[in-house]
Length: 218
Image (tube, rainbow, N blue to C red):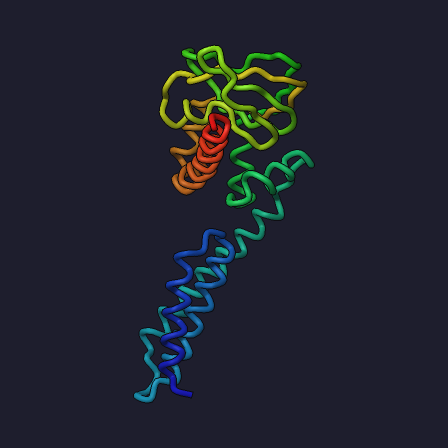
């Protein structure tokens, strides 16, 4: 087998690693790429390329150490049944450790029917996720949307720092997970990768609501 094929495979795997979001899988793909480049260096017709071999051995060692750390972190993380469901349905793009950090800055809250969660034109101090229940969204006195399990409340205000664009009122007893805006922003500022990931989650939620709002007008 031509040793150049190992080089091509190695660089393909390295390129693929940049598209992998899960950190553990990224490490595994990177190791596979380094192994392929290592084999290319060993079987090169002109003789072993020792500089390339040594660097790839070093890269593999670093990735192995990081994998051990990731596995130990995952083993140390435990969630309640509610948190497991929330992770699987809404925050699956986060690593378990990232999700643990996320829930540490928030808290569960149960509210009764007809509870006002935001008021149009007023400051929103928290961002909320409807875990179980429902709510109505009203703007200028008209109902413009209905919220259900998995929907966020206050995400637009969180993203833009604007006041509430609508009033949200529960229509049945509702279970929420609530993050104080300032606490969540401090967490995301310390963790840029988490900030990008949650922007994707909130962006998807806002796009879904916009589509439902347009359908409601038709």
